[in-house]
Length: 352
Length: 133
Image (cartoon, rainbow over all chains, first blue to last red):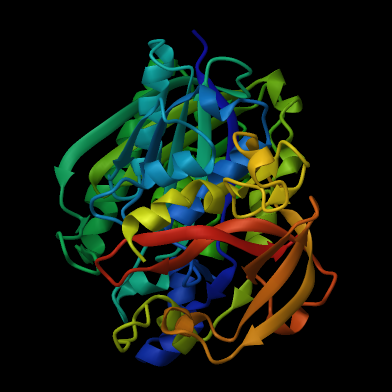
């Protein structure tokens, strides 16, 4: 059975803040931070946005592009590390808001920045086994970095939704594989507002080791090499890591350019690879092949080998904003407004 | 507001579901179980009606003195929207500057947080309007 992406949709909040502005407040060289991280600005959710509203916006954009009845959706999985509720699934609100259910299964996923791709794999399994007709996989986050921490320069917000099915597949997933170990490079304990991380430990033994292992494993299974793909998307905690990992694997800058969004919107965590892949699907032509590898701290990587099909010509891509349009829709904030919007200012009870 | 009372309205607030009187054809939002014009003739004939979510600003006000839950968003815009289906809704206009809102401006509905019952309470989601793109 051919299983793959039937439709997709993306969403990004419109607010942005620059590393220079964050650095100005904390006495850090924001200009240097911007160069080190290769981040020009990051997205910021408004006070009335959270992972639920971002997931719904992305899912509605996904549904606008196709003719699938929401009643045919048998599963919704939302991957995020910033679900608004610790107990009450994000997916329940998403299902109701897109007119799916109640005869479906829903669960929230958490695996740092790769929970969205884990959701895609789950939906592929359910569709492939015939348990459901369509599944929705969403990766979305409104990630937080502690004030003044290096993470604050990159942690941003956004998400993308994927309709996984076996009919009218616009992008066939030829194969997916994963690589997972117990590597404590980044974590957040229950009840803590901000995550902690191992600094430089997040690089070689974490991001690079897992992405390289998953990618090489997929090359080996498929008998492919980087030149066989038109596009490649890698998890992008900053602008530099994905460029370096792509080079190590033998991909060119042209192959990763379309899916590299972090320089403009920051690290959208669970939304990162889903958004990068959506950006590629916005421009992809039938027959083109996409290589995508997500990374989630903790740690693991999910790799995907995808081929765009002729059906993409029939997908109404123009019915929803492209990722490029969402990236360009922006308003810059000063740090004080950003701090207010992100709940970093202690308020009197009643004002939330 | 109790959890149950708000929960009953989720369907209409998430997806702009109103009702249409099966007797006279009038549309209502929020949904009504009885048509105020047809009274008992409408009993059992009120049908669900899905608004497409597009409309134009009929009038608006910029709120500077906000209720506590909206402190973070002020100044913000509250507007009466004439929906394309011919009924009026009141809602917040977001994703644009208050100075850019004009009477007659085309808008479309979206979903956002509309409130929450404190840091440990339920979060309420509902429609707001953004400029039509």
